[in-house]
Length: 507
Ligand SMILES: *[C@@H]1O[C@H](CO)[C@@H](O)[C@H](O)[C@H]1NC(C)=O
Ligand SMILES: *[C@@H]1O[C@H](CO)[C@@H](O)[C@H](O)[C@H]1NC(C)=O
Ligand SMILES: *[C@@H]1O[C@H](CO)[C@@H](O)[C@H](O)[C@H]1NC(C)=O
Ligand SMILES: *[C@@H]1O[C@H](CO)[C@@H](O)[C@H](O)[C@H]1NC(C)=O
Image 1 (tube, rainbow, N blue to C red):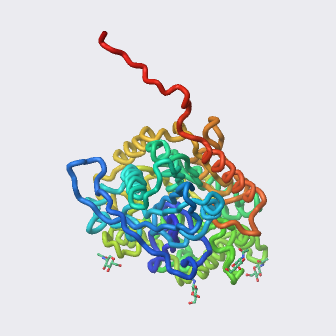
Image 2: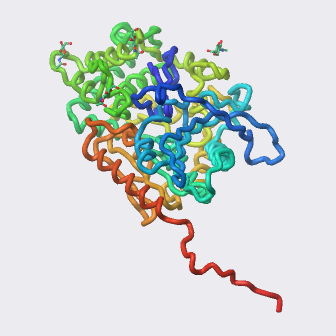
Image 3: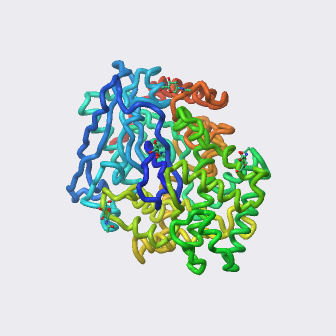
């Protein structure tokens, strides 16, 4: 029953009901117009190398980027918004906290779409053979080449300081970019970035549970009871028809199909996870129809509504609410269908971003949001192998758990996971966002900073500031600005008084 991917800088709406939310990550779109001064935003194209790590491969492609010069004053810094696991949204080039900072610091702003997402197509299609060029390392090298290219194209003074911004996976990229290319990027604001790659991300649903429980402990109890009832019905085989009807399943449930059963449990858990992850951010909070705004409170109020007697009925009522808010008539959960959609290699496929991002999870990150203990609130039907089997089913035998384990280790030793060694990065996380569990939430050294905002969700600090913001969110935005202000006045020359070369001669 997944319906949309909140991929970075965008919400791709799905005309199929599958494949989008399996590994929930990504930033939404701000609630702003897609124009600037009533003019549509212009797309530019940067000639990029296909393979940065093979100098003999001369193939190139065109990468999409956008620019905002409204606030730039000569001598100002350059801000770079990093695109991520979805189509880049033009809205971000005009709005968001980073644009408010740009106005303050007279910055020139760029945003660059991530290779293989949106309109940035390095290859003919997204076949598994072509996806070998999809990786965070290639994306970081794209960013490095882009910076060098823009300096030349726009005659940006060499001493201009570049600041990287990113939320969600691009939050990780922002920190990694600063670490890997410190001569190109002076500082970074890394929002909600998972820095630790991990196959079994069981902490995800723990944070969801805590968030629901903080509002109403009974909400969690009811969800747990509902999942136990669902489990019992599926086990006994009695009243399957009731499940088909209550949960508006698109296809009748075959209880012997383990993958379908897992997928159903996951879809229903997703109803909560998706709302918690994006709870009350500024994507939709300015919608005119307030009834359309669903928060974790909305869902918990249904789960604790005493006029609905059975926990299972309450769980179904939540599902109804989520279906109708997304204009869906039925709950899609058939595994085989989902895999077939994810196998589509066409750029036009409605599951394109999802195919690409799933590939990155299967080769670099894992991040699988499991529920696999008997006592788990959302049941025990989504163990790690449910997700890792999908890698094999979508991309082929080679993409097995061994490849994944090595890929995840590789990511961690390449970037240093939570022990990353870098300077001038501010990490921002929200307590309600499950992704904070894989990020840096405590300041470790004097040269970096961690900001932890109690009560906010995924990438909350990145959206445009609003009068409805929690006071702690407003404080966090001000703190980020103060770091930027400090760092923009720091020169890279640590000690300019001692610049003599110590020279040894043969004599
Ligand atoms: C909501 O949007 C309207 C129109 O774009 C704007 O005037 C108003 O200030 C916004 N409200 C909030 C709380 O952001
Ligand atoms: C509880 O559920 C009933 C029946 O669906 C509904 O009429 C009522 O508005 C709900 N109450 C709350 C507080 O949501
Ligand atoms: C649902 O459909 C209505 C009417 O067609 C439309 O106004 C609304 O934007 C749609 N909502 C979503 C989430 O697609
Ligand atoms: C893949 O998706 C495209 C675009 O939606 C569609 O036209 C095509 O038929 C799909 N291919 C397969 C094999 O399903």
